[in-house]
Every structure is written in structure tokens, then in C-alpha cells.
Amino acid sequence: MKRLGRRRFLHLTASAAALPAFSRIARAQGYPSRPISIIVPFPAGGGTDTVARIVAEPMRVSLGRPVIIENVAGANGSIGVGRVARAAPDGYTLSLGQWGTHVVNGVAYTLDYDLVKDFEPISLISSGTFLVVARKNILANDLKELLAWLKANPGKATVGNAGIGSPEHVGALLFQNSTGTSLRSVPYRGAAPAMQDLAAGHIDMIIVSANVALPQVRAGAIKAFAVTAKNRLASAPDIPTVDEAGLPGFYVSVWGALFAPKGTPKEVIVKLNAALAQSLADPNVRRRLADLGGEIFPREQQTPEALAAFQLAEIEKWWPILKAANVKGE
Image (cartoon, rainbow, N blue to C red):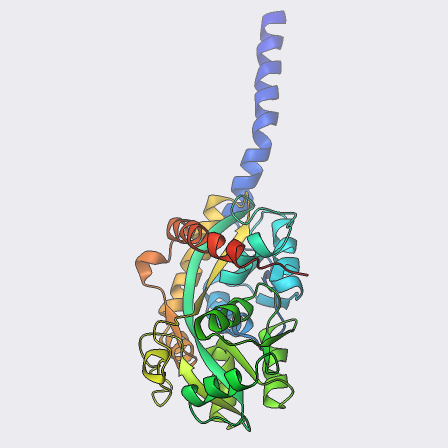
């Protein structure tokens, strides 16, 4: 009887120990059972926010639950990304991150989370080309004239950015290094408020993603001088490339991707990856992103493994450059 009792006790103990694992599996199998939040770490209306809202609706249809966009701005996105790093790893709080938040911030800020170890990669989304744009009444009609004006007024022209360490900030630093110009940096909480001030004529210029700039360019509110890429944009073929405009090789772009907190069950990551891939295959999504200068990553690169490798390669490429330039947040 004692022997039987011991066996029964060990069996019950083993069963109890297995319950958390079974519970996680059950939750993953039943996922999602409630709305999913995608944290966009910048204000509404910026490039990252626009991409998130474009892909979220088809994901909602695929997952069968609402996909809610939450804007949590500040410190070049590190506040919003930090919230995701500390969130429960259950697939209900995700991060729409990009080059600035998941590469640059590792150098620019002292973070209380690790950009690689504290997240589960889900998928790359798209890359976006930047434009060199300026207020509409600036005394220049092309990039060469703009450079001549900047050199004639060193330290006087203002250039906006989406925060210290943001792609706009780094792009402006590279621009000054490449052209021998000196600009006064004006940081904002995101690209959208910076663009609003440019359109209002409060700052002189900004180097910003095409999806933020093109609506204002098309409205005639600002001037576009060049595309920071080898090829012109299909959605704005009249804007010359930097090679054509007189600043060869000045290429600036930014990528976006979806991340979950570390420890999110693999089954949940698989479901989210499939939903995002289905969204990126939607012709309407592809058209909208293309209209804004975005280029969707090929399907073979839309995997967690591809995103993990891509992020590490970007860190290895950019961290030495950023450290040499002493890029630091406030």
C-alpha cells in the first residue's frame, strides 16, 4: 500500500509540474481570444504609424480579432518599445519596430531592455526610401541650389527630425558629413509633427521617409529635391534620385518589422507571421505601401529567422558608424 501511495504521489506531482506547460499550449492553441495591440512607438501620422495601420486591417480579418494600434511616443520610440519588452509574452502586445527603434537606440540611449534578447522576431514588413524635402518658399529649386544656399548660410538653416537617434536625425548627420554643410537640428516626438512644422514653414528642411513626405509634396505644401535611393519612385517619378540631383551615393532608407516579447509561444509567433504574410500579399496593401514609396520584403524574407538575421546584420553594420558619430539621445 505504501508503495502504491508513493507511485500515486509521484504521478500527481509530475502532473502538477506539467500543468503550466499544458496551460501555455492550450492558450496558444486558442489564440487569439481577445483584441491584439500593436504598439507604434511614435505619434499618429508618421511613417511607422502609417505602415502599421495599413497592415493591421487585413491581419484583423485573418486572426478574427480586432488589431488595435496604440501610439506610445517618446525617446525615439524607446518608451513604446520598452512597454512591449515588459509585456506578458502571450501575443496580445506587439511592437511595430524599425531601424531606429531596433538598431540605433542600442547606441543612442541607455535602455533597460535588450534589443535582441528581449524580443521574439515575427517578420520583416517593408523598407522605405527617404526624400530630401524643404519648405516651399526656400530659395532653391533643385538640390544643387539647395546645397549652395546651405553652404552660404552655415549654421543658420534648421533641419527637423523625429528625435535624437531617429532615422531622420542620422540621415541629417550623414547629409552634413557628405555635403560639408552645417545645420541646426530640431528634434520632435515623431516625423508627423516635424512634417507639420515644415509645411507651416517653421523649419527649413528634413530628410524623411517618402510615406510621410509625399502627401505634402503632392499637396504643394513642401518642395522635394531628391530620392535617397538608386531608382526613382514609381509613385513619384518626377522626383530625381540623389545620383541625378548631384549628391551621388547618398542612400538612406528605413525598414519596419513586427516583434513580440521574449518567451511568446512559438505557436503564437507562427499564427502572427501567417497573418502578417497574408496581409502583405493583399493587393490593396501592396498598392498602398507602393504609393507611399514602400517596398515589401520578398516572401522568403518574411520569416522570424530572416528578421533575426537581418537585425543582427544591421546592428553589426551601423553600431560602429553611430558610435563614431557619437549619436546620443537626450
